[in-house]
Length: 293
Image 1 (tube, rainbow, N blue to C red):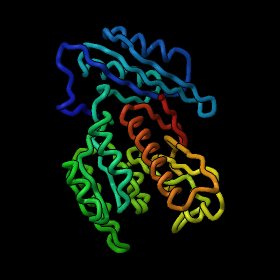
Image 2: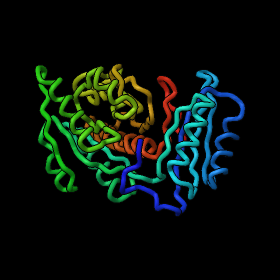
Image 3: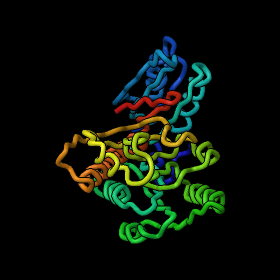
């Protein structure tokens, strides 16, 4: 991926880079990466690594300050990739990731992401809000974000998904966030955007599916409510988990209390997942994730 013009480093000035990588585990990986960066005048400011004994893969995330030209770093990384069968990504640390947020009618996650982007340094640039309804158009307008109404019907779903892909391409979007978007994405769309779509759902699934899950949970006397943020795959709500959060509840809580607490948990879990993805802290390990917090 090339670096957007507005995030290009100043020629000759030190740039803070973030490098994330994975490869089959073997001796010498850390030394090779550190040595390559040192050869290019790099000063490592943060480094995390993990070797997964189950998959046999090695994962690493490095932040480094270096004045070397980007093309020189990429050329050296390509050489290392050939040597270690490595998958890697290099980006400017802190660059805001171009993001499309998809919603239906629930506003809590959209409000939270837009607020955090403006007030808490969430490293995303929300370039559009896309919805199958018009209920949240005013929310997008309040924050000055373009709103796109893309209706979804049973017969026109392929056309709606084609329009979404057009928007992703036109806007050069790197990430799509389903912020309580109540539509199931097709297998084809999931494959096209693999590793680039994050969803949030309440953690009652699969116990309380269908309508009014919080009422079902209240009826069963649950003691925990929660939320799960995960990458979207063709297996509904079963993609690699990025983050989960919970709140304890008891018999005094009404259904509406559970709903309010659940929305707060959803906001927190989704915001952390989006932040970690945008900071390149999440690496895929099959159907699991490695998260360098």
